[in-house]
Image (cartoon, rainbow, N blue to C red):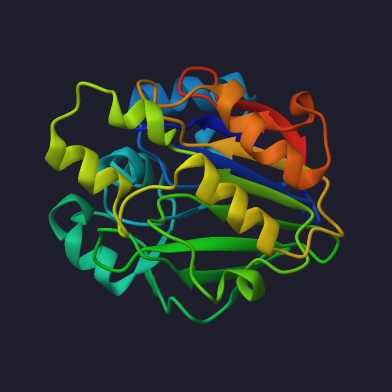
Length: 258
């Protein structure tokens, strides 16, 4: 299994995952917060034709994650997997999609070559989830858009070989930013986004014995920097800062093996 980011941040998120297939690679997109043309452009950058996508997994209804999902799905007849609460929040945007599949936020399901394990997270959305994807040899965990650590994360994110982990903001940068107090409170609140130190604490709580790749993701342009995210995560891993990858807003992240 390998994965790549089309881009990660408040202006749009999408993660491309590829598993080995019997005749051709099986590709799924996790979220798509980019418009149709921009999503197609970013997919092309990764040598991926939209027609080759077999599914789109959705985490929640915020525009930076779902803004382009249904247009892409309609244009290329791609099945969309999402929770009931997320579908209710996106009903108007989802109109005209031929293949909508509602998932249980607590129940794993199978796609060709992949076991998909959704799990609920605290975020200011209707029924948000994050995912672990398992191809039998590798386990990729994705954890973004979560307001605070929860007790079930160590079990949900067990035995990972790769992890995409939100490092949205640095507390000092957020406090000193020009954001209004209400927005600062939302971002730093229990249903907002992860601060660097919180991300490090989550990472420290996991069994890291099989972990080979860690990607810092969903960094705020205004309230975080790649060097700060790396500095928070690398001591937990015992890695150099350069060994922690970063998925940024403009360039995303090139293909990595899980």
